[in-house]
Image 1: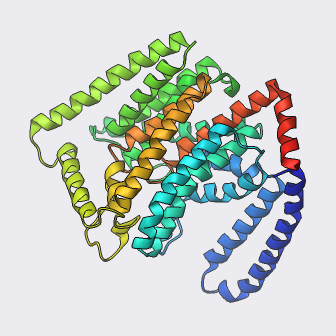
Image 2: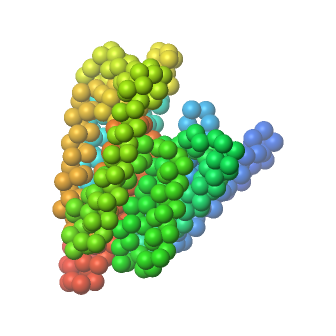
Image 3: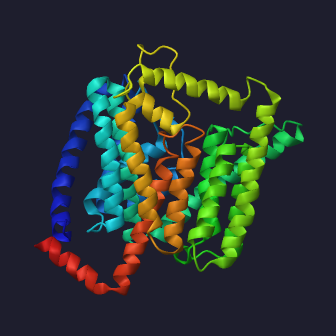
Length: 439
């Protein structure tokens, strides 16, 4: 889409939003006495949408810090994390006004996600219920929607600010978590931390979130313009937060991510050795904890409990092996006692069957291959984030937001940065792209 067309779209969009605002004002008198919060929310959405059209980068930038917020809003079975809602709002101006053309790497990732989405269409037909369709769109949004939104930030020249906003939000959450953990330790309570501030979080969500922050602080790409001291402090705070969470999934994900940066980030020899020195002992530490759980024979610990959950998930898959039981089948009354399988392959099998699993494997393997080919330290971080999330999904819930959206949002930013740098080095590429759009 050319800049001329984007400008042409802006006026009709403003007209539509104005008409929506007028219609909303007419409904205020009727709805306000019964449901005042609905009116307030509708007005807020209109104002945010108008602001997004006036400055297309505003909403994608706001999505960077808000993506970490897991507190849910809404109701009636359609409640969403606030971070996911913000991502949805940011996607609209991003997909319309983001710089074109998309880079080949971004296009490949979007097509790979389309393969998975096409594979899961079969379960929508086989299992027609509302949550199935809603979750199908939600899965697309937290991968492709996040990639495009991140691309708008990176390609638009706001990557440094956007990633700093994300890291700032992560550090605030990490500091609050460490503070809560230390208070519990002072009281003699050394159990895993489920933070309550700034909003209630599961320990694995908390641990995974600070894991992403730790990986970026560790890599510290030059375009982030962050001093070494700040990066080291941020890394240590995130690692400390991960420690108080006691999230083994996050520790394994961090170790794998650090090792990938160490292996792929050629030219960063010192950082590579440091990544190996941190990552390998972390993996050994987690392996030791798991071995102790196995040896204990306690059938109620997390290791044996997961084995039970995996078996239950396989039993549920056997009820519909080809197309699965539908996305979010565990919310339906015809599946009493069902739960979201805590492992990505078992979840895809149970929800979308063998067809869905094939699509997921193509997508996941394709992401790794595509990102492995992206050069430099920035490409290494993108690969580490996506693989870290895939690793964490082997031990916990995967298709949840915002933890799945975050690595793809950041990957979109990184790909946008690389494309912007490439165009600055080779300005003839921008002229060729504009000419192709006009034709």
